[in-house]
Length: 162
Image 1 (tube, one colour):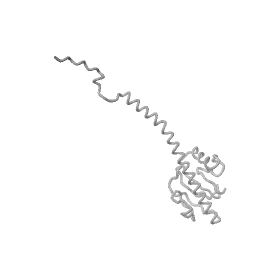
Image 2 (cartoon, helix red, strand yellow):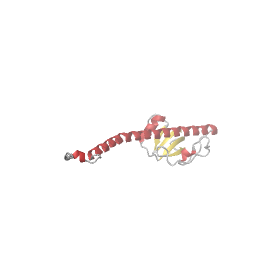
Image 3 (cartoon, rainbow, N blue to C red):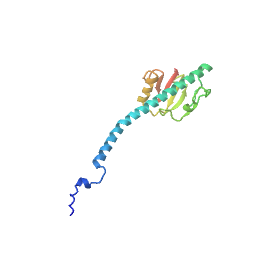
Image 4 (cartoon, rainbow, N blue to C red):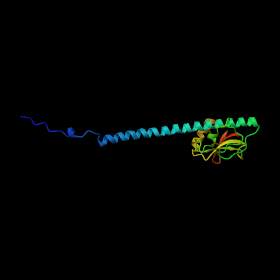
């Protein structure tokens, strides 16, 4: 005669899988990790934008100074995103100058106006003044009202000749 098997306990009949509490804990852990990672990634992105902007400014400064030395004067004023007359492709990165948005969201402009005799500006910048001040620290004095890199009426200008 067969013995009756022991009654099944509730844990033995439970289906394999995760409980709602276990899933919630995993979701919370992933959320905490994301909350820690997103600001760090944003900071890295901003540093990359700043480095690209500074590199572009330095490249353009060198090209305009070379033009000035070879021609005895600065190129004529040009509109936003327009490559100034006389800037050769060998000395000048035309695609970077003409792009609709540079690394800080603005457009390049060669300035010869009331504020400066010669300067490289970026207009319609989408970055805030805090980021632009950080850029100023990288290439100048960290003050947007003094030095070579200044803010004039919403545009940021690297001054080659005051």
